Image 1 (cartoon, rainbow, N blue to C red):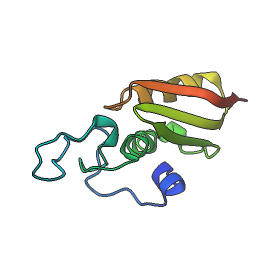
Image 2 (image 1 turned 120 degrees about the vertical axis):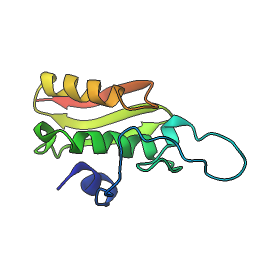
Image 3 (image 1 turned 180 degrees about the horizontal axis):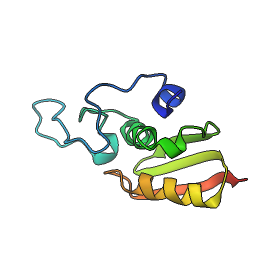
Image 4 (image 1 turned 180 degrees about the vertical axis):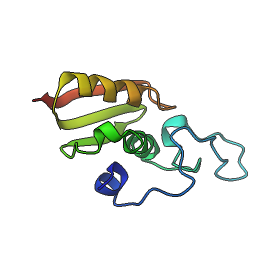
Length: 113
């Protein structure tokens, strides 16, 4: 089971992107904050967390990790749970940091081992 399915109960949309171009939500002309951009550029309250989950889905080395969860607080990605090694956690933090809209990655609630 992939990250999007496990965390958000959704299959990966065919045209989903980790860093899509934001699509204007309405005619107001206001830009969608990057942390609220969904998988297809639409407004999504949990957009950043979903795009991080998509990024993890796209890296097969994370397929067997099912004890880590992704959330967001504003533009901060929050990782919670357990990972097998510090190296894996470091790689996951690097990937999460590379998702547009992420200003920080919090790992205070992650245990290694």
